[in-house]
Image 1 (cartoon, helix red, strand yellow):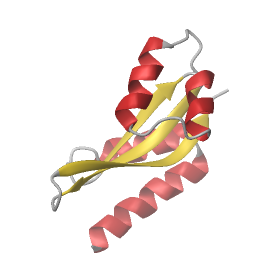
Image 2: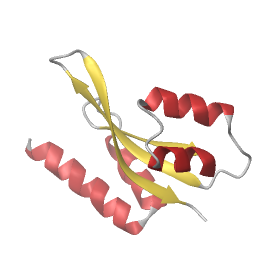
Image 3: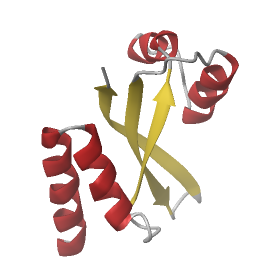
Length: 101
């Protein structure tokens, strides 16, 4: 548990510094499957629908984003994948939405 706290603290510090610092922090830890954060580029339209609660799963969000991708994507979503061993399924937690202007 202490390692998970250290990793989360490094990610949180990166989030306070911005998108590039967050990208560096997640790249440091993503070699370990237990600590799997990802950044997903989405359009304004996809981000709006996410905030409105129109997606039930990350897969729905990704599918919509791919179909409605624009050339000037300025939003990135930081999410974390956790494996639920009891149900043998993945749980996705959206931690931050970055607007990269």
